[in-house]
Length: 215
Image (tube, rainbow, N blue to C red; front, side, top):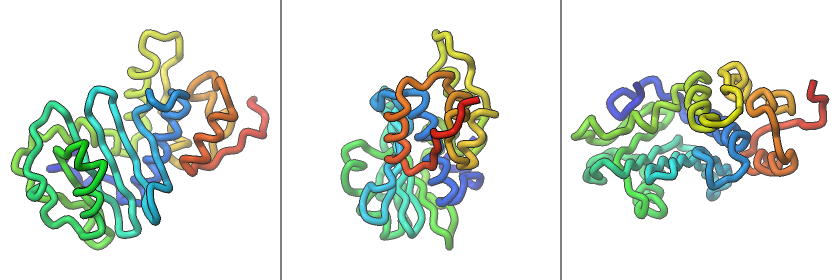
């Protein structure tokens, strides 16, 4: 299980960024209304910065900032005590300091932190309490389509007449293949507004082509 004490299997920053885009696209398909999505991705957060966000609607939140230097993860779980931020960010590269100690991270809070640079790979600061809940938010980053399919089936299709979401339908997006109508419908069965979905994909920066036949 991925966590702040078991992070070797986390993908490198570039791969994590592509995965973040895929998660945002999948959630845009499963939840046309943005406020009910778990995962969102903004490729234009600031100059040379992109951000992936997770919100569960119950107070837990995760932000991943991507920069040319790598990326940094700030996780917050509302039921866990916040550790000394100076300790969990000990050794943090200067490129990520403004993000971790500025807004919105400071207002949200941080219960765990990890960062990645090409030279050093994944690192953490001082983790005094391994039971920091990080596995509850990091598990989705295992890069396995089954993980998203199982989670989304429970979250988005429970108590509905929708068919379960399959790993086979999710996998093309994990591979960053162009989203076609057929691939979209393999995930959700019905798309209420293709124009709105196209606008979401443009904001996320994910390739799509809705001009072909559905069959």
